[in-house]
Every structure is written in C-alpha cells, then in structure tokens.
Length: 188
Image 1 (cartoon, rainbow, N blue to C red):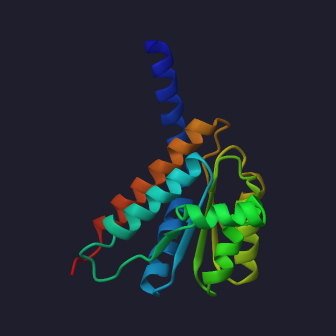
Image 2 (cartoon, rainbow, N blue to C red):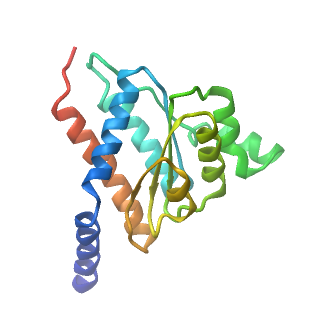
C-alpha cells in the first residue's frame, strides 16, 4: 500500500513541477484585471470539475474579497441546480451553461471552463459563445487539453493523462492563486 501511496504522490509532484508558471501568472493577471475593472467572472465544469468551479467561486468571492477594497464578482454556472435541470429537461444538457451566459454575459467579462478531458460539449458551447461576445475565455484542462484548450483565448493545462491527477492540479491552482493574490492585496 505504501508503494501505491508514494507513486500517487510522486505523480502529483511531477505534474505540479511541469506546470507552466507563465500561464499561471497570466491567469492571475487576467482575474485581477477583471476584478479591477468591475467585470464579472463566470466559471463552470461538470462532475469533479464542477465541484472545483464551485470551490473557486467560494474562495474568490469570500476569501479573496472579504475586507478588500476591490472585490471579485465570480459566478459558478453549475451551482444553480434548478436552472440547470430546466435547461437539461427542456432543451439539452449541452446548453446548460450557454443559455445562462446568454442572460448575463457582457463584453469584457471573463468565462472560465474547467474540463479534465477538454471535450465537455456544454463547456465548449459556452466558451464558443463567450468568444463570439468578446469575453475573455480561459480553459483549465487535463490530458492534452482537448478542444477546449484550442478554442479558449487563454489556457492552463495540467498535461497529465489521468482524471484524478488533473482534478488535483486544478484545485491546487485555485489555492495557489488565493495565496498569490492575497499576498499583495490591500485590505479596506
């Protein structure tokens, strides 16, 4: 058992070391710019990526905003279950994020899609729509990044061919950004 534990931890460590630090810096800068320009940030994902999207939203809206002069305005599109169910039932699950963006997205807002495979149809449709509306689009992916990495304007790819490791890296990115942004921000 210890061997399997060590192997997993070694794989996580290797994936972290292979992250592109410039991509992370760019993502942090884009999110700070959105906050400073009073723009909204939308984030979404399915399954474990949906849980990560929800966690991002919590950390940005409370942890990186409470007591601060400038606050983030982040909305998790997979947290409104009744809306998602209505679109899924009446239209298609492929449209659950797209249709919500049609209600709220303004030019210059930021849309983040998290997808381990990079091929989730509902995330792809939302990012394509956001691109058509001149939003800032960001992909957070695993594996080879799939289609999402190709269509988003900015991307961070875990570049590991394992769903759990990809999800670990995505969650770590949230906490890394939390630490970096909070390290140099002024409080009210």
